[in-house]
Length: 245
Image (cartoon, rainbow, N blue to C red; front, side, top):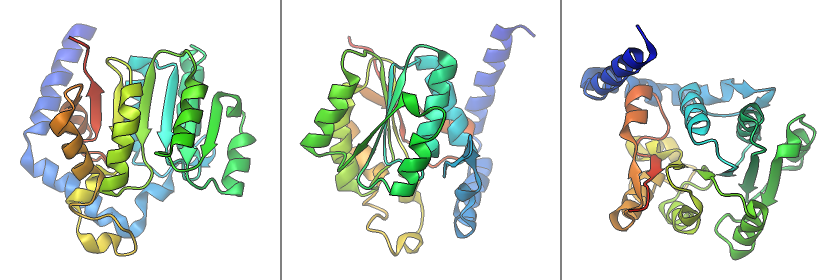
């Protein structure tokens, strides 16, 4: 089987997965049941906790290789494994790409681990509210004249905050690149899973994405990604920037 035939078969497999309601329910049941075990805490990238499903990491790797962005921006860096992950991919691509990590509170021990990592020279950390004018200006200044931009939103998961991030950062995303909104799965989970958090059904990243797409025609959900992953924190969250007409 040559590569073209392989890719065609893969596309057919993905379509079939997207139509397999039984398998999709099984995947969702796994997502619900893993919560009490904090499954995503089990994984690191190059020594740093990443706190993501491995499936989403693979999807992001595929997107980054396809887009080859000059800049990857992530809001919400947690322990830092994700910015290390993106930096390692930038290093492998070899296009002098950088990573900008934004967080309202970068804990000192996390900052130390990131700044002491061998890939730290590719990472720019910005501390503050991701939707504030000051932080946005810092991000734009770091981007400078770099052209290709990919963005991942993974900070405060309330509808209001994610919607603001979408409004603020979406204009920075370059054509055919992606704006990835993580943890849209909150909308599909029982409210009691988040009793100590402000987000819940109706007040989630997914509800923000749906409102955003009602008036923004420059982005569309790339459903093929969630169809092939099945297990993902970002259903309806992989938004592709459409070409200008």
